[in-house]
Length: 106
Image 1 (spheres, helix red, strand yellow):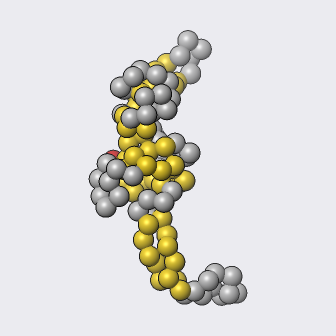
Image 2 (image 1 turned 30 degrees about the vertical axis):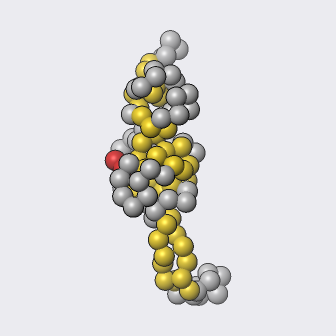
């Protein structure tokens, strides 16, 4: 399984596609597919049939489709800019994600 530098509840900015420039929180990370689902971004319409026990509503629903991780950039909490993510080893031996622009720990 691949490790991604984007995690759930991170704020990301879309770099490519129909929603380029939009920001949102990551709702779901799919590392095997190298994709992320971002809140209120890449919304598509899906035609759904009713479920067996009528638990699922039939009709046309709005669904957040996953985006490729290469099309999103993590937004730094300090400098508020989309950035690449680096890794720094701390004194206690643990790893921390680091903003490549300002050098702060994310």
